[in-house]
Length: 308
Image (cartoon, rainbow, N blue to C red):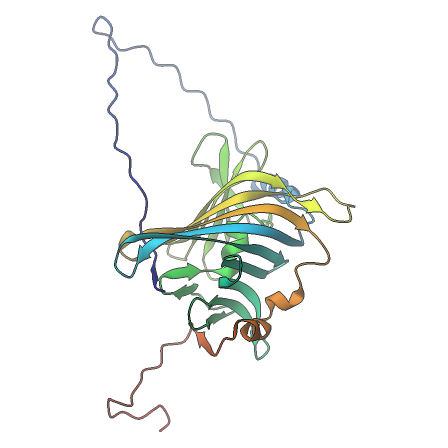
C-alpha cells in the first residue's frame, strides 16, 4: 500500500465584507490595546513543565487517521484504532490497526546490535521494518508516510522544555508565546503555549536552515489517571494533529485522539520497545535501514557488487 502524503484539505471561499460608511466618514477605530510584556522564557517553560511533571510513562488508547494522496494521486484517508505508549525519556510505541490486527507500528528504542533508533513496521502485506539509527538527521519516510519518533513526543507536548536554553517571542495569536529551543545540530524546536495556563497549542520542528520539518496543533487538555496515586495527575493534549510537509509544497496530516490516558507501573511492557521482539511478533523478514543509500540491483547491468 503506497501512501503519498500531500495536501488533502478543503479551502473555503473568501467572503468579502463591506465597510460601513456613515455620512461619508469611517467609524472611529478603537485604540489598540497595548501588548502585555512577555514573561521570562525560563518562567514560562517552568510553568509548561509543571503541567506534565511526573509524566515518566504513558499508556493510552489511540484513534489515528492519516490523510494523504494515494499512488493514483487521489485524496485518501485511513483510520485505525490502537495504542500510544511511551517511557521517558525517548521510548515510543504507536500502533494503528483494526480489531484483529495491527497495520502500522512505529516507535523508538533498541534496533539491534546495541544501537538505538526509530522504526516503522508496515504490516499491511509482507511485513517490513524500516529503521533509522539514533542521531541520523532524516526522519523515516516510507511510501510517503513520514515518521520522526525522536521528535514526536516534543511535537505532542509530552516532553519537558529545557528552561535554560529556551528563548521567547510573541505567539501567532493574542495571549500566546513561542518558546524556541535550539538543538545540537542547529535545528530548532518551537512550542507555542498560552500565557495564562502554559497549555501547549502548537509545536514546530525546523532544520538548521529554517525549513519546516514537522508541525502540530494540540488541543483538548486531559488529565492523566495515576494508578497507585501519590502524585498530581499530569495534563496532556488529547488531540494531536501533525502536519507533514511533502514534495512540491504538499501537506499531509496524522491525527491522533487519545483516550483513557494513564500512568501505570505495569504497562507498557518493555518488550514493546524492542525491535527484535516486534520483528518476531509481526513475522518481519526484511529490515531496511533508510539512513543508508538504497542498494542497486546490478545483476542485469553487468556491474560488480562493491568489493567484488
